[in-house]
Structures are given as structure tokens and as C-alpha cells.
Length: 466
Image 1 (cartoon, rainbow, N blue to C red):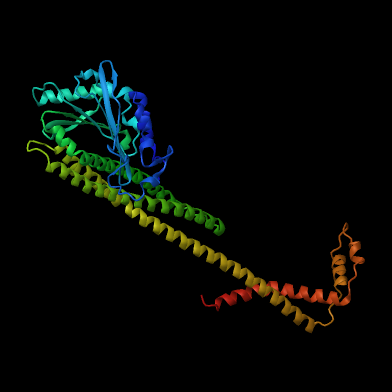
Image 2 (image 1 turned 180 degrees about the vertical axis):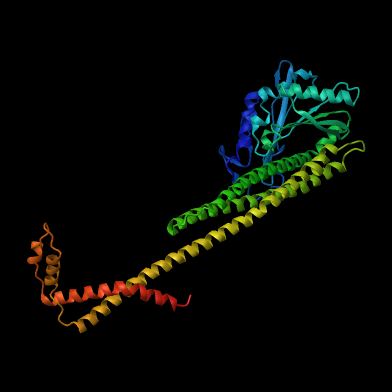
């Protein structure tokens, strides 16, 4: 269950306020994924979800009571579905068997309530306007009529542009799109995609009914492809930002402090940041691969549904507007993602190399510090050993050393200055004779060790294998 799983049903229920259709407010209560007014997806368990009708009594749609306003009677229905992992709805409002002026079409979209900016469908939507013109002289007249329908339906200063056209089940169909920005793929819920289908052939409605399920699946695949491409672009953009920051980390490697401890601190900081970036970078690459798989899968499914439609199409039909999305748009998106991969893949190797280099430098730095600590400890042990050893020799050679206190007193007397007198505390200082002897030999040992310990350590390192 995703956080916005109920979004579509809540938006459809809100449309009741725009069309004065009270039945729409009851839509969630009629779905098998709701229980006691709350979303309950367990109601869908054990059911095939490739095309699951969420209202499981006949008819599997919520039909609205006719609403009459200004001599026009509005009717319609809501047909909720689950297509694999996606919720979808075929929402229909119409003026059936009534003559409606083109200028009145805005009534089918009051306050723009059916626009993507209002519905905010997770992976996008398609608006299909089906009309039966009273008279159309030629193809140009049909195109101009379709343009007028779009302007009247949307009531916007800048209507969508005509991106394609064709013939479906004997009747002309015009495709309009409004893309908010061209520098980056917009989110599908920002795209306005409208089809205007003008009945010209008597079999159009009958064949449209047969193909309804295929058309729903076809547009679902289309929206999934666009959504996956938008997500792929986002992943690529985020990965490139991390990749560009890699250069700054490389510069830091050339400006490391010389002090070993500070050097290790900087290296560990860079390593921690690099580890986070490496993980995020790998995740973006994985997401890119997932989005590519999604596009490939839905491109295959799109072709399947299109083939079903083609099988019942009429000889005069022109399905180029549907073929183009499969042969051009989808293929372009797959090629673009391949370019993203080609650009970003070396970056993954660079991150691994940088991490390995930093780990190596940290290891070397730690070894150096360990060697320094070992040498200091070795020096200390050598010093203590030399001091004790020399002190022992001194005790053997000089069994009766001079009195330490008297020796110090004589030193003060010899160094006496006009203002310098022997400290009174020294005259009063008295220690056991044996302790004074020990202190004398320790001092002799320490002084000797200070002289010979560096020499001993140096000779030891010369003969120690590296």
C-alpha cells in the first residue's frame, strides 16, 4: 500500500461538487478495497489484478442519475479498475442524444475540474472528447472543429497544440498535448493529453465498445512509460550531481594536511561522505535500470494492446498517432536512458577506486602511527632497561657513593652568588642512607641511559628486518 493509494477515489468523489452528482460521493463505499468507509486493500486479495473491476456487482460501474440544467441533461458513469499495480478509472460525463453548441462544452469541465492540475493522477491521465458533429465538409473542417472543441472545453488562454491525428474505427481523431516545459520531462500529472474523436462512421461506437478494455490498457501503458521516463530523468539528474561532487573530493585528496593525525581525520571524513555518496549513486543506477525495465515491459504491452485494436480496425483507419508513441516516443526514451547509463557507469568505478584509495591511505597512516607508538614504547623500554642496568653496574662499581645531600649542598656552595644562599630546607633534609644510595645509582643510570638509549635504538633499527 502506498501513501496516495486512495487519492484517485477521493478526487473522483470530490467531482460530485462540480457536477452536482451525489452518487459520486458514495463511490469509495462501493469499492471492494474499502470497508466501513476506510481504505482496506485486503479486499482485493486472492483476485487477479491484471484487470480487476473494483465494483463487483453488475454493472461494474457507478451510473449517475441524470442532472438537468439550462435544458441540457447530463448523465455519466464511473468505472473503477485495478490494472496490475495501478488504480485507474474511466470517468464519463455526457450530453447524450442532445444538440449542444460548442460554446457549451465547458460545462463538461466546470472550473477545470478534469484537468491534470486538479486531478493530480499519480501517473497521468487522458481526456477523450467524443462528439458527433452535425456536418463536416472535409478533413480541414474536422480539424478546425476539433480545435474549437478543445478551446471551449478548457477555457484557457493558451490551449494545447495539435500533436498528431489519425482515423480510428472510421472516424477522425485528433491528439492534443500541452507540455509545461521542454528542458526536462515533466511529471505526467503536469501533462495535458486530449483526444477529440469526431464520429463519421456508423460503426465507430460499436467498435469503440469492443475495444474499450484495450484502449484503457493502452493508455495505462502510455502513462506508465511517461512516468518511468520522468523518474529516470530525476535519477539521472541526482546521480550527476553526486558525480560532479566527486571532483571536489578528488581535489581534497591532493590537499591533505601533512600532520598525520589531521590527515587521518580528513581522510576518514572524506571516506564517510564518499561511502554515503557511493550508496546513493549505486541506488540511482539501480533505479535507472528499473525504470528502463518498466519502459521496456510497458512498450511490449502497449504493442500488444495496439495489435488487438488493429485487428478490429477498418481498412480506412490510420493508427499512426498510436504507432508513433510506440515507435518513436518510447524508443527515444529507452535510448536516452541508455545514454544516461553510458555517462554514469564510469562514475561508479571512480567511486570504488576513490574508496579503495582512501582506505589504503587510512591503512598506511594508521600503520605509520602504530610504528611511531611502537618506537616510543621501544625507546621507553630501552631507556628503563639501560637505566636499571647502568644503575646496577654503578652499585657494583661504587658500593659507597658520596652522600647525595652533601653533594648537592657542595654544589650550592660552589655556585653561591651574592644573593644566593643554600636553601634552609636542604640543611634540614634527611633521608635514610640506603635510600640515598639507591637514588644516587638511579640518577647515574638515568643520565647514562639518556646518552646511550638513542644510539641503542638506532643500531637496533639498522639490524631489524623491514
